Image (cartoon, rainbow, N blue to C red):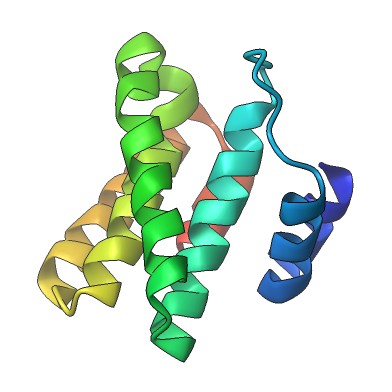
Length: 123
């Protein structure tokens, strides 16, 4: 997970996805699985925008679907990341005004819950 984190912040999305592919999610529900889903989701949406490859879009869409119920479970921990995933998906779909709103919501939520690293990513 640490190597994925580093590749994420340096925008090395291909390397991040290679690590994710080599280390599949375990069936057990682990607390840190959500970070893996988030990193893979954001990386995939960015790569979908750059490469127009359908499978990257699908990974990103799956990440959004996974995060929706997580927000219902714990808004504090997952809301900022869901908004950011949604913003990237809106941007990919060409819905720039909706993307802007979702980015702003992510920033507001990051500030509210004091997730400075998420706020930085949303900018």
